[in-house]
Structures are given as structure tokens and as C-alpha cells.
Length: 112
Image 1 (cartoon, rainbow, N blue to C red):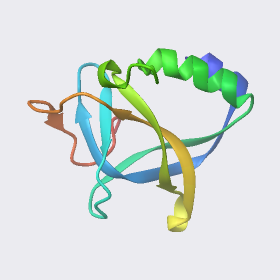
Image 2 (image 1 turned 45 degrees about the horizontal axis):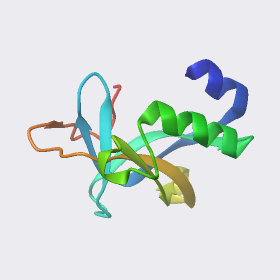
Image 3 (image 1 turned 90 degrees about the vertical axis):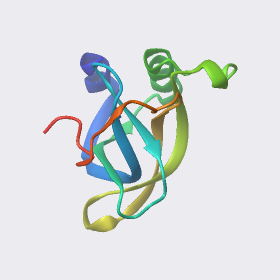
């Protein structure tokens, strides 16, 4: 997937959104909370050929807009914050299943 992103996306900078991060399996899952003290950190990308990229990422993330209830993740347009807390609307994949029994990653960073 990293080769695909390298081809169609440019790394803008690091950012965060207001939410919680969990260890789901070998991968993380984030949920939006809107709580200022809860942050999930990641990289913000500028994307070329948006429809192609979103279609590919939707399949990779297990998102099917026709089957929201069973989708592993859902793609939502939310506010993310760049350096100096500059707000920006961005597509984010949020975990769409229960986090009950999953370990919360309090730092908000999946890879430290």
C-alpha cells in the first residue's frame, strides 16, 4: 500500500484528530470522540486522483458504503489539526466495530 500512496499522495505534515486509538489486532483502530484531551496522531496526505485513491483505500480498509453496519472501517470527513493547531477537513478511516475488550493506546500514536 505504501507504494500506491507514494504514487498518488504527497505527505503534507503530521496532524491529529480528537479521538481514541485502540489496538484491534496487528492494526490500530481509531474512533472519533470530539474530546479535546483525546488525540489520535498520524500523517496528513494531499491526494491526486481522489476517486481512484478512495476506491482503493476503501477496499483496503474494509469500507463498503452500501454495507455500513458490516464495514470494518468507515470513511468520514472530519476536522484534523495540523501543526500550530491549524484545522483542515480531511477524510479519515474510523473503526466501525466494537472496541470492547480492546487495549486503548493512550498516547494516540500507533508506532512510537
